[in-house]
Length: 495
View 1: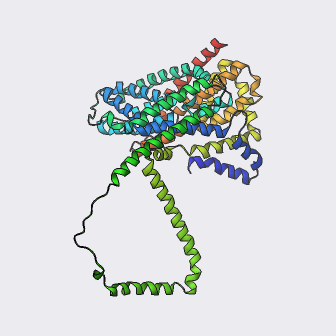
View 2 (view 1 turned 180 degrees about the horizontal axis):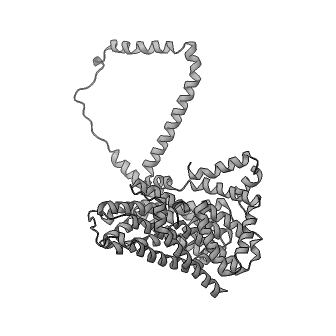
View 3 (view 1 turned 135 degrees about the horizontal axis):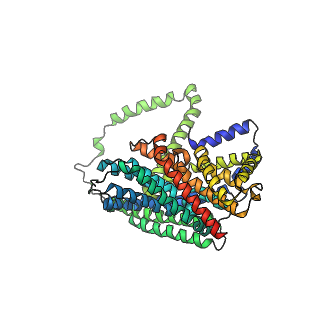
């Protein structure tokens, strides 16, 4: 079953068994509460996703990736470092999903043209994307959930998570470099026929998209001082990017249609006259039509007319929908391509998990988890390391998005609020670390992991669960320890 539909099957079973009520858990799961508002999180994710995917459709990200490959790709170990650094930078300014979508096929193409093993480069890219996604508020939906629930501003988030991200990034590449050294070739023959400039498909959208993304990040930083909701800041930029794409597409396709609609002179070799048409042919063609019309007036045919009318209406409706999509593809190709790639699956999945977490809260499980965490966090250091470890493992059981929702509710519960301020703050940021770094443990730890495996499989690169764990488990453990240690040091200094 598709992962995004699984929560709704659980919800239907709970409703059928009367374990939950539609008017309480289901409605409240949509509306939200305690600082977690599902609609605002979905708006924020989609606004940012449109900007980032539009940049990818322009070819800018592919241009940078191919440029890095052609410039530093002759030495395999240097190229591994370059791919890792590039993935980190791209994940910081966009998010981990965009990095996986963009770089996975490029690395596979690079492997096909050079004969180098793609596995270490794919793993390096994926680890870097999940690690760097903790750096900024917008890097991962789990960051947004936790920060929104605890009223953490964009600037405050960046200040706290900057050093843990850098520590985890350095630790990750160090462990990965040591464990993959034998599988990386020293010399690689680069295909010089693949030029970076060929990747840049839409120059104007690449430039304007970069301006929109940078402006959005600046606005998010400034909004921290005025208390404006993050989704209110990002939505106008997402709409602006959509309008820019639509205007450029319409102007480009209009010019193309003008050229294609230029009149083509047609010359007839012989004029057609009425004398060329035989009246007997007309009679022969009309006779079958008349008999068919008479047959259609029989009682059986008249009874079948409603069914035929419904079938014809459905066929016409399908034709109009397909024709409308085709017109959209022809008139605004960039907008159509971006809209097709938006993560629509996150809507039913996240809303369904919000409802399930609300059901757990109503049934008393959230207070139990809060009580357990309270007794596991006697000090700030214990809170950071224990919550970081528990959430890292939990996101590989629940997936990091529902895990972040569940633990955010538990950390907000009055039972856990009895711990000191340092432990509460440490547990909150440790939850963010666990939701990002923990996704480096197994492929099911995040939606990006499932997407990564799917794209790699399409490119005939089979990366199984145990192969992935063998590569990533040592990296994840070291990253978690280093980032949590840095967070403890930050909390000790700021205390």
